[in-house]
Amino acid sequence: MTLAQLLDRAAQRHPDAVAVVDGARRLTYAELGNQAAALGRGLADMGVSRGDRVLIALKNRLEHVLAYWALQTIGGVAAPVSFRLASGELRYGSRTRARVSPCSSPTPPRRCSRQRTGGPGASSLPARARPAARGPSPS
Image (cartoon, rainbow, N blue to C red; front, side):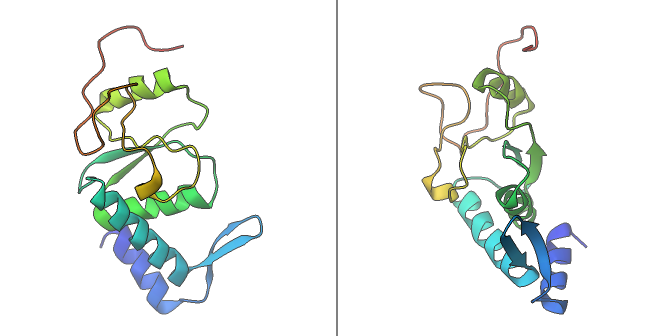
């Protein structure tokens, strides 16, 4: 059984039970499952597929939970990193060949930049991130 299947099962058994609390915002298991599935479809439309690692650089809030579960619905691998990382540090993190959609706000994926970390002229999200040039790790 996958994590996505566990979420589906929870949504079927306890659809109205609160699954996530973020300040005044709350999502039931049914809402979490529906929103995660919708976000997962958006990520898939952007080229993210089963086994792809996706860096998640968000604060500990509802959007982070949704990104995690959205990746579970499409078989992606969440790679959470600190939201405090600078763009150079994210580029260094792209050596893992993770796909990156640099969004600093909780916007739907169709509204996020489709560029990877890598600066101007970087390839669009569907292309795998190329390993950065070897060098010292950022401090």
